[in-house]
Image (cartoon, rainbow, N blue to C red):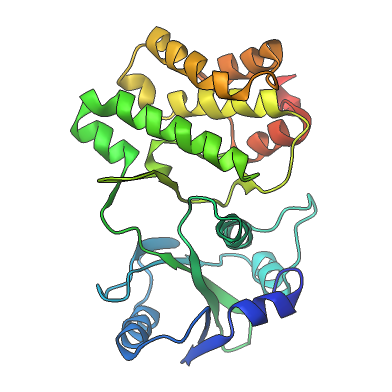
Length: 279
């Protein structure tokens, strides 16, 4: 596995083996969970990536399954090695980041297990990620689409979550409304951490500029005027002073509100302030 394999063995010591699939869990799984997982393994995935609650309400688990589509990816994930740019494939990035965020007590679903299936030749062909199911939650995008008047409530919850994640050293570079899970009561949680960091950045101002701008760009702009959004961001930024350099923040914020910034370019912002293509 990735990094120190002993850590993964110690933290996920319980193994389910069924057909060509091996899954590792934090704790022993009951029979009803085992049966549901075996049924999941038997089903051929309907798409390259399939995400859904496990078909067992008592288990309260959420599963992700990715079909590995290239020989290079299969080898990298099987050996736990990064790509030339130093990144792991997205499946492993999400595995690593989810574990670390949960370990720090950040508001994310707990990583319950992970695993893989192998082909007859022994190569990995599917990767599984299994997390806590957030029951009684709705994602922010669904909430706003169903009730546009809740946009300010969703924004406030997201901005509070963003600050809470930063306080735990977690930087989520894909935090749009659909990745913010809102309970009926209580605090929001973040999902889909494949494009996130758990280390410090020398470019906090630029990173925040992207995060706030990206949240507006991904659909929220349809439900609020830009002026009203800017005013809400101004209030939220008060929590980050005096660390934020306004010129650096504004430069990236203005860009991220109106232009698509790809997943790899977002990582450039965290590590160097701006993507090379935008300088």
